[in-house]
Image 1 (spheres, protein in one colour):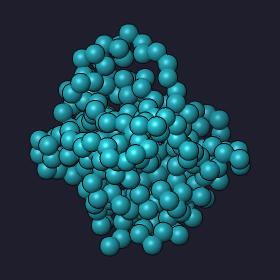
Image 2 (image 1 turned 60 degrees about the horizontal axis):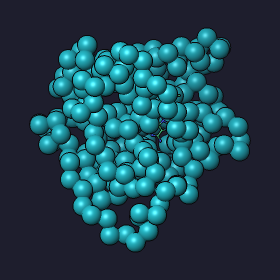
Image 3 (image 1 turned 120 degrees about the vertical axis):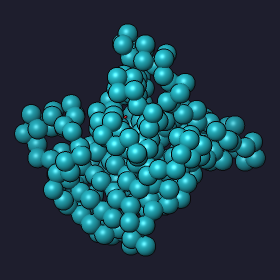
Image 4 (image 1 turned 90 degrees about the vertical axis):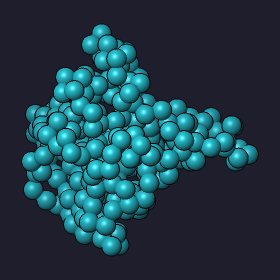
Length: 244
Ligand SMILES: C[S@@+](CC[C@H](N)C(=O)[O-])C[C@H]1O[C@@H](n2cnc3c(N)ncnc32)[C@H](O)[C@@H]1O
């Protein structure tokens, strides 16, 4: 993984972010199974990403070299906020000819994903403990991604927190940056009003065509989705295609 020396004068001082992020850093201990999977696999599966000050930040000079990392050229799927890895592990085991990258700031979730990697003996999945917005800005090469998945992003339902939501017009521009023309952006949420925001973001973007869609059958039910259903919430899926 290459990265060059930082030449920006203020980089060393950037201990805190000034812009809102879509997550609260949730630490937490790894359980013994997670710890074992982490010890066995993290070195191979979890990318080493140089930071730009705060933890989970991405140094802007760092680039993800997809072909070198996977040792081949294959379609690439990126999942943002992969949680416990239920979807990405399932997909990677179903599609050995495709490469998968999960971006998740919650370390126990990443460790849980490694348990799935271990059981499935998966070679086509990597994880990065990074703020996805930063990864999409610089780390992931332009037009390198075939599918981008954002399933059940944190809803930030209070109005004063809406600025922390991941899916915004600014984020659509980042999604457009990494997706190749014809690439697919999939979203799902159990928060009706966030689904409306997502649909508006897609409709307002010059780079995408799409909107609300049927449930995508490549998406197994996750714990998080099941909780939403148990609480009586409707699930909303959206699909958009990168124009160009
Ligand atoms: C509500 S959970 C959903 C998890 C999973 N997609 C599912 O459906 O079960 C949202 C996840 O997104 C992660 N997340 C939120 N913002 C993120 C960001 N900017 N970069 C990476 N992960 C993020 C959180 O840590 C959390 O695990």
